[in-house]
Length: 132
Image (cartoon, rainbow, N blue to C red; front, top):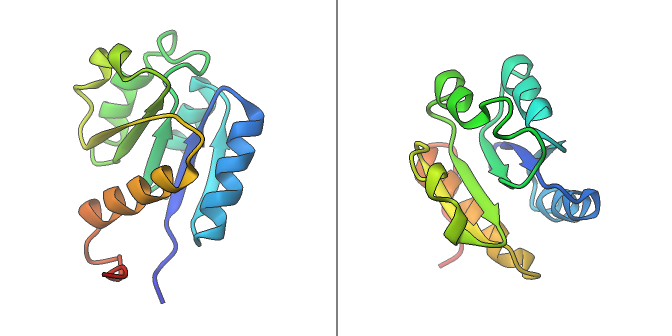
């Protein structure tokens, strides 16, 4: 049995957050949701275990709270998937440690695949091998 991973999911659209939460929960992940940068920081300060952050860089208060700088200070080991409509505008995010980039589209399988790939790479001792 594979141990459950805790994922913090952000998206500016509450319907998209809920869709991704359902999809990732069905895969066995524990999913927390944040609607803005302030809530992300709240989770990072107060929740002991977050294994992965899926970050929509267009959520409110990302720049205002210095989210990316604080993320590097609080949890430099935390893998981050930048999930954005345009990957051309994520230049300032490239300095994030362990970041992966995924362009948003309607295919939730791509997100689930990326999540598994990042978790396998980051926590190899906690992930059972997937199907060949």
